[in-house]
Length: 384
Image (tube, rainbow, N blue to C red):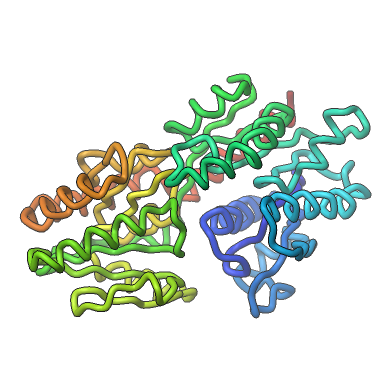
Protein backbone atom coordinates (compact mmCIF):
# COMPACT_ATOMS: atom_id res chain seq x y z
CA UNK A 1 0.00 0.00 0.00
CA UNK A 2 1.20 3.50 -0.84
CA UNK A 3 -0.37 6.56 0.72
CA UNK A 4 0.16 10.30 0.63
CA UNK A 5 0.35 11.88 4.09
CA UNK A 6 -0.20 15.61 3.71
CA UNK A 7 0.42 17.55 6.89
CA UNK A 8 1.19 21.00 8.23
CA UNK A 9 4.53 19.78 9.54
CA UNK A 10 5.80 16.87 11.62
CA UNK A 11 7.41 16.95 15.05
CA UNK A 12 10.13 17.99 15.89
CA UNK A 13 10.52 20.16 12.78
CA UNK A 14 7.24 21.88 13.58
CA UNK A 15 5.94 21.89 17.16
CA UNK A 16 2.34 21.12 18.11
CA UNK A 17 -0.06 18.32 18.90
CA UNK A 18 -1.14 17.86 15.29
CA UNK A 19 2.49 17.68 14.22
CA UNK A 20 3.26 15.05 16.87
CA UNK A 21 0.28 13.03 15.62
CA UNK A 22 1.60 13.25 12.04
CA UNK A 23 5.00 12.04 13.20
CA UNK A 24 3.46 8.98 14.82
CA UNK A 25 1.33 8.20 11.77
CA UNK A 26 4.41 8.31 9.57
CA UNK A 27 6.58 6.31 11.95
CA UNK A 28 4.22 3.44 12.68
CA UNK A 29 2.68 3.05 9.25
CA UNK A 30 6.17 2.91 7.74
CA UNK A 31 7.13 0.26 10.32
CA UNK A 32 4.32 -1.92 8.99
CA UNK A 33 5.53 -1.63 5.40
CA UNK A 34 3.24 1.13 4.16
CA UNK A 35 4.96 3.31 1.56
CA UNK A 36 4.46 6.97 2.45
CA UNK A 37 4.88 10.11 0.38
CA UNK A 38 5.16 12.71 3.15
CA UNK A 39 4.20 16.25 2.12
CA UNK A 40 5.37 18.65 4.86
CA UNK A 41 7.57 21.65 5.71
CA UNK A 42 10.13 22.88 8.24
CA UNK A 43 9.91 25.58 10.92
CA UNK A 44 13.08 24.71 12.83
CA UNK A 45 16.85 24.89 12.53
CA UNK A 46 17.05 21.09 12.43
CA UNK A 47 18.19 19.25 9.30
CA UNK A 48 14.85 18.07 7.96
CA UNK A 49 16.42 16.42 4.91
CA UNK A 50 18.03 13.75 7.08
CA UNK A 51 14.75 12.84 8.84
CA UNK A 52 16.94 11.58 11.67
CA UNK A 53 13.91 11.16 13.96
CA UNK A 54 13.12 8.01 11.96
CA UNK A 55 15.11 4.79 11.85
CA UNK A 56 16.84 3.57 8.68
CA UNK A 57 14.10 0.96 8.17
CA UNK A 58 11.39 3.59 8.58
CA UNK A 59 13.09 6.05 6.22
CA UNK A 60 13.25 3.34 3.55
CA UNK A 61 9.44 3.58 3.31
CA UNK A 62 9.21 7.39 3.50
CA UNK A 63 9.59 9.76 0.57
CA UNK A 64 9.88 13.32 1.88
CA UNK A 65 8.44 16.15 -0.22
CA UNK A 66 8.94 19.63 1.21
CA UNK A 67 6.29 22.20 0.36
CA UNK A 68 7.16 25.48 2.14
CA UNK A 69 4.42 27.24 4.06
CA UNK A 70 3.99 30.68 2.46
CA UNK A 71 4.68 33.94 4.26
CA UNK A 72 2.34 36.92 4.17
CA UNK A 73 1.58 40.15 5.94
CA UNK A 74 -0.62 39.78 9.00
CA UNK A 75 -4.26 40.68 8.49
CA UNK A 76 -7.60 39.22 9.64
CA UNK A 77 -7.70 35.72 8.20
CA UNK A 78 -4.04 35.66 7.18
CA UNK A 79 -3.52 32.12 8.49
CA UNK A 80 -6.44 30.75 6.46
CA UNK A 81 -5.17 32.63 3.41
CA UNK A 82 -1.69 31.17 3.82
CA UNK A 83 -3.09 27.68 4.48
CA UNK A 84 -5.09 27.73 1.25
CA UNK A 85 -2.07 29.00 -0.70
CA UNK A 86 -0.09 26.13 0.82
CA UNK A 87 -2.84 23.70 -0.25
CA UNK A 88 -2.50 25.03 -3.82
CA UNK A 89 1.25 24.36 -3.72
CA UNK A 90 0.68 20.86 -2.31
CA UNK A 91 -1.75 20.11 -5.13
CA UNK A 92 0.72 21.26 -7.79
CA UNK A 93 3.45 19.09 -6.25
CA UNK A 94 1.19 16.06 -5.89
CA UNK A 95 -0.61 16.17 -9.24
CA UNK A 96 1.99 14.18 -11.25
CA UNK A 97 1.91 11.41 -8.62
CA UNK A 98 -1.85 11.10 -7.96
CA UNK A 99 -2.16 7.75 -9.71
CA UNK A 100 0.42 6.22 -7.34
CA UNK A 101 -1.67 6.43 -4.19
CA UNK A 102 -4.12 4.00 -2.65
CA UNK A 103 -5.21 6.58 -0.07
CA UNK A 104 -4.55 10.28 0.59
CA UNK A 105 -4.56 11.35 4.24
CA UNK A 106 -4.73 15.14 4.72
CA UNK A 107 -4.44 17.26 7.85
CA UNK A 108 -6.39 20.49 8.30
CA UNK A 109 -6.52 22.61 5.14
CA UNK A 110 -3.56 20.94 3.43
CA UNK A 111 -5.81 19.00 1.04
CA UNK A 112 -8.23 21.85 0.30
CA UNK A 113 -7.49 22.22 -3.40
CA UNK A 114 -7.19 18.48 -3.90
CA UNK A 115 -10.64 17.93 -2.39
CA UNK A 116 -12.09 20.82 -4.37
CA UNK A 117 -10.74 19.51 -7.65
CA UNK A 118 -11.96 15.98 -6.99
CA UNK A 119 -15.43 17.06 -5.85
CA UNK A 120 -15.84 19.17 -9.02
CA UNK A 121 -14.94 16.18 -11.19
CA UNK A 122 -11.76 17.75 -12.56
CA UNK A 123 -9.53 14.95 -11.30
CA UNK A 124 -9.85 11.33 -10.28
CA UNK A 125 -7.78 9.89 -7.44
CA UNK A 126 -7.76 7.56 -4.45
CA UNK A 127 -10.07 8.19 -1.48
CA UNK A 128 -9.19 11.39 0.37
CA UNK A 129 -9.39 11.49 4.14
CA UNK A 130 -9.33 14.68 6.20
CA UNK A 131 -8.46 15.17 9.86
CA UNK A 132 -9.28 18.49 11.49
CA UNK A 133 -8.39 16.99 14.88
CA UNK A 134 -10.64 18.64 17.45
CA UNK A 135 -12.94 20.69 15.23
CA UNK A 136 -12.22 23.43 17.78
CA UNK A 137 -14.01 26.05 15.67
CA UNK A 138 -17.29 24.29 16.55
CA UNK A 139 -16.51 24.16 20.28
CA UNK A 140 -17.01 26.88 22.91
CA UNK A 141 -14.50 29.71 22.40
CA UNK A 142 -12.74 31.49 25.29
CA UNK A 143 -13.68 34.96 24.03
CA UNK A 144 -16.10 36.75 21.71
CA UNK A 145 -13.19 37.78 19.49
CA UNK A 146 -12.22 34.15 18.88
CA UNK A 147 -15.88 33.23 18.37
CA UNK A 148 -16.11 35.90 15.65
CA UNK A 149 -12.96 34.58 13.98
CA UNK A 150 -14.37 31.06 13.98
CA UNK A 151 -17.73 32.17 12.60
CA UNK A 152 -16.40 34.40 9.85
CA UNK A 153 -13.28 32.53 8.81
CA UNK A 154 -13.19 28.86 9.74
CA UNK A 155 -16.57 27.23 10.18
CA UNK A 156 -17.77 27.30 6.58
CA UNK A 157 -14.56 26.08 4.90
CA UNK A 158 -14.09 23.33 7.49
CA UNK A 159 -17.71 22.24 7.11
CA UNK A 160 -17.45 22.19 3.31
CA UNK A 161 -14.19 20.26 3.20
CA UNK A 162 -15.47 17.71 5.73
CA UNK A 163 -18.62 17.08 3.71
CA UNK A 164 -16.71 16.76 0.43
CA UNK A 165 -13.98 14.44 1.69
CA UNK A 166 -14.38 10.70 1.22
CA UNK A 167 -13.40 9.98 4.84
CA UNK A 168 -13.40 12.15 7.97
CA UNK A 169 -11.25 11.01 10.88
CA UNK A 170 -12.48 11.51 14.44
CA UNK A 171 -10.76 10.88 17.76
CA UNK A 172 -14.14 9.94 19.22
CA UNK A 173 -15.93 11.47 22.21
CA UNK A 174 -17.70 14.73 21.50
CA UNK A 175 -15.80 15.20 18.25
CA UNK A 176 -17.82 12.55 16.44
CA UNK A 177 -21.03 14.33 17.41
CA UNK A 178 -19.66 17.61 16.06
CA UNK A 179 -18.75 16.01 12.74
CA UNK A 180 -22.22 14.51 12.40
CA UNK A 181 -23.85 17.83 13.34
CA UNK A 182 -22.22 19.66 10.42
CA UNK A 183 -23.70 17.21 7.94
CA UNK A 184 -21.11 14.46 7.47
CA UNK A 185 -22.65 11.04 6.92
CA UNK A 186 -21.92 8.45 9.62
CA UNK A 187 -20.71 6.10 6.89
CA UNK A 188 -17.92 8.57 6.05
CA UNK A 189 -16.62 8.88 9.63
CA UNK A 190 -13.80 6.72 10.97
CA UNK A 191 -13.02 6.84 14.69
CA UNK A 192 -9.41 6.37 15.68
CA UNK A 193 -7.98 7.86 18.89
CA UNK A 194 -4.42 9.05 19.29
CA UNK A 195 -1.77 7.41 21.45
CA UNK A 196 1.84 7.13 22.59
CA UNK A 197 4.74 4.82 21.88
CA UNK A 198 4.77 1.71 24.05
CA UNK A 199 8.51 2.02 24.71
CA UNK A 200 8.06 5.44 26.31
CA UNK A 201 5.47 4.37 28.88
CA UNK A 202 7.00 4.31 32.35
CA UNK A 203 7.02 1.02 34.23
CA UNK A 204 5.99 2.43 37.59
CA UNK A 205 4.32 5.41 39.21
CA UNK A 206 6.24 7.74 41.47
CA UNK A 207 4.84 8.40 44.96
CA UNK A 208 2.87 11.62 45.31
CA UNK A 209 5.16 14.51 46.11
CA UNK A 210 4.76 16.71 49.15
CA UNK A 211 3.71 19.32 48.37
CA UNK A 212 1.74 18.00 45.40
CA UNK A 213 3.14 19.10 42.03
CA UNK A 214 0.91 20.35 39.21
CA UNK A 215 2.13 20.62 35.60
CA UNK A 216 1.11 22.68 32.58
CA UNK A 217 2.60 21.34 29.35
CA UNK A 218 2.42 23.23 26.07
CA UNK A 219 2.72 26.60 24.39
CA UNK A 220 0.77 29.72 25.30
CA UNK A 221 -2.61 29.59 23.65
CA UNK A 222 -5.73 31.23 25.04
CA UNK A 223 -8.00 28.24 24.46
CA UNK A 224 -5.71 26.02 26.58
CA UNK A 225 -7.00 27.61 29.81
CA UNK A 226 -3.61 28.92 30.88
CA UNK A 227 -5.09 32.26 31.94
CA UNK A 228 -7.49 30.46 34.26
CA UNK A 229 -4.56 28.48 35.68
CA UNK A 230 -2.65 31.70 36.33
CA UNK A 231 -5.67 33.25 38.03
CA UNK A 232 -5.96 30.27 40.35
CA UNK A 233 -2.25 30.26 41.20
CA UNK A 234 -2.31 34.00 41.92
CA UNK A 235 -5.37 33.59 44.11
CA UNK A 236 -3.81 30.72 46.08
CA UNK A 237 -0.59 32.66 46.58
CA UNK A 238 -2.45 35.72 47.82
CA UNK A 239 -4.40 33.67 50.34
CA UNK A 240 -1.22 31.80 51.35
CA UNK A 241 -3.23 28.58 51.04
CA UNK A 242 -1.73 26.97 47.98
CA UNK A 243 0.26 24.12 49.57
CA UNK A 244 1.37 23.03 46.12
CA UNK A 245 3.99 23.54 43.44
CA UNK A 246 3.29 24.45 39.81
CA UNK A 247 5.58 23.71 36.86
CA UNK A 248 5.28 24.94 33.28
CA UNK A 249 6.97 23.30 30.31
CA UNK A 250 6.71 25.15 27.02
CA UNK A 251 7.64 28.40 25.26
CA UNK A 252 5.61 30.76 27.46
CA UNK A 253 6.04 34.54 27.14
CA UNK A 254 7.72 36.29 30.07
CA UNK A 255 4.65 38.51 30.42
CA UNK A 256 2.51 35.49 31.35
CA UNK A 257 4.85 34.13 34.02
CA UNK A 258 4.25 34.30 37.78
CA UNK A 259 7.33 34.99 39.89
CA UNK A 260 7.00 33.01 43.11
CA UNK A 261 9.04 30.21 44.76
CA UNK A 262 6.20 27.72 44.22
CA UNK A 263 6.16 28.28 40.43
CA UNK A 264 8.89 27.10 38.04
CA UNK A 265 9.27 27.52 34.27
CA UNK A 266 11.40 25.09 32.25
CA UNK A 267 10.84 26.70 28.87
CA UNK A 268 10.66 24.77 25.63
CA UNK A 269 12.00 21.21 25.83
CA UNK A 270 12.47 19.31 22.55
CA UNK A 271 14.64 16.46 23.79
CA UNK A 272 12.23 13.60 24.41
CA UNK A 273 14.09 11.89 27.25
CA UNK A 274 14.52 15.18 29.09
CA UNK A 275 10.85 16.00 28.58
CA UNK A 276 9.64 12.67 29.94
CA UNK A 277 11.98 12.97 32.91
CA UNK A 278 10.56 16.40 33.77
CA UNK A 279 6.98 15.18 33.40
CA UNK A 280 7.61 12.33 35.85
CA UNK A 281 8.60 14.84 38.53
CA UNK A 282 4.97 15.97 38.78
CA UNK A 283 1.69 14.49 40.00
CA UNK A 284 -1.22 16.13 38.17
CA UNK A 285 -1.41 17.56 34.66
CA UNK A 286 -3.53 20.70 34.29
CA UNK A 287 -5.42 20.85 30.98
CA UNK A 288 -8.49 23.06 31.55
CA UNK A 289 -8.97 23.82 27.84
CA UNK A 290 -11.92 25.56 26.25
CA UNK A 291 -11.61 23.30 23.21
CA UNK A 292 -9.50 20.28 22.31
CA UNK A 293 -9.06 17.26 20.10
CA UNK A 294 -7.32 14.42 21.92
CA UNK A 295 -4.43 16.29 23.53
CA UNK A 296 -0.96 14.80 23.19
CA UNK A 297 -0.06 16.48 26.46
CA UNK A 298 -2.61 14.33 28.29
CA UNK A 299 -1.37 11.18 26.58
CA UNK A 300 2.24 11.99 27.43
CA UNK A 301 1.44 12.88 31.02
CA UNK A 302 -0.56 9.69 31.61
CA UNK A 303 2.24 7.65 30.04
CA UNK A 304 4.52 8.94 32.82
CA UNK A 305 2.07 8.17 35.62
CA UNK A 306 0.34 11.51 36.10
CA UNK A 307 -3.31 11.98 36.97
CA UNK A 308 -5.12 14.62 34.90
CA UNK A 309 -7.37 17.57 35.68
CA UNK A 310 -9.08 18.53 32.42
CA UNK A 311 -12.27 19.88 30.93
CA UNK A 312 -14.78 17.64 29.18
CA UNK A 313 -14.16 18.83 25.62
CA UNK A 314 -13.25 17.08 22.39
CA UNK A 315 -12.22 13.48 22.99
CA UNK A 316 -10.78 14.14 26.46
CA UNK A 317 -13.38 11.94 28.17
CA UNK A 318 -11.86 8.92 26.44
CA UNK A 319 -8.77 9.49 28.57
CA UNK A 320 -9.90 11.27 31.72
CA UNK A 321 -12.62 9.95 34.03
CA UNK A 322 -13.25 9.64 37.74
CA UNK A 323 -10.64 6.87 37.98
CA UNK A 324 -7.83 8.59 36.08
CA UNK A 325 -8.40 12.19 37.14
CA UNK A 326 -10.92 15.00 37.41
CA UNK A 327 -13.16 16.09 34.53
CA UNK A 328 -14.62 19.62 34.70
CA UNK A 329 -17.68 20.72 32.69
CA UNK A 330 -15.98 24.05 31.89
CA UNK A 331 -12.67 25.81 32.61
CA UNK A 332 -14.14 28.28 35.09
CA UNK A 333 -11.88 29.88 37.69
CA UNK A 334 -14.15 28.78 40.55
CA UNK A 335 -14.36 25.12 39.48
CA UNK A 336 -10.64 24.93 38.76
CA UNK A 337 -9.64 26.46 42.10
CA UNK A 338 -12.06 24.28 44.06
CA UNK A 339 -10.77 21.13 42.40
CA UNK A 340 -7.10 22.03 42.89
CA UNK A 341 -7.74 22.69 46.58
CA UNK A 342 -9.47 19.33 46.96
CA UNK A 343 -6.57 17.58 45.23
CA UNK A 344 -4.06 19.18 47.58
CA UNK A 345 -5.88 17.69 50.56
CA UNK A 346 -6.19 14.13 49.18
CA UNK A 347 -2.73 12.70 48.36
CA UNK A 348 -3.94 9.07 48.62
CA UNK A 349 -6.64 9.72 46.03
CA UNK A 350 -4.06 11.33 43.77
CA UNK A 351 -1.82 8.27 44.04
CA UNK A 352 -4.65 5.93 43.04
CA UNK A 353 -5.56 8.09 40.07
CA UNK A 354 -1.94 8.25 38.93
CA UNK A 355 -1.76 4.45 38.79
CA UNK A 356 -5.15 4.17 37.08
CA UNK A 357 -4.12 6.74 34.47
CA UNK A 358 -0.97 4.80 33.62
CA UNK A 359 -2.89 1.52 33.35
CA UNK A 360 -5.62 3.04 31.16
CA UNK A 361 -3.08 4.55 28.79
CA UNK A 362 -0.99 1.39 28.54
CA UNK A 363 -4.02 -0.83 27.88
CA UNK A 364 -5.77 1.23 25.21
CA UNK A 365 -3.69 4.01 23.65
CA UNK A 366 -0.42 2.73 22.20
CA UNK A 367 0.58 3.43 18.61
CA UNK A 368 1.51 -0.22 18.14
CA UNK A 369 -2.20 -1.04 18.48
CA UNK A 370 -3.61 2.09 16.85
CA UNK A 371 -1.47 1.83 13.70
CA UNK A 372 -2.76 -1.70 13.11
CA UNK A 373 -6.31 -0.37 13.49
CA UNK A 374 -5.57 2.42 11.00
CA UNK A 375 -4.23 -0.02 8.41
CA UNK A 376 -7.48 -1.98 8.68
CA UNK A 377 -9.40 1.27 8.08
CA UNK A 378 -7.26 2.13 5.05
CA UNK A 379 -7.61 -1.35 3.60
CA UNK A 380 -11.37 -1.18 4.00
CA UNK A 381 -11.60 2.25 2.39
CA UNK A 382 -9.34 1.38 -0.55
CA UNK A 383 -11.40 -1.76 -1.19
CA UNK A 384 -14.71 0.17 -1.33
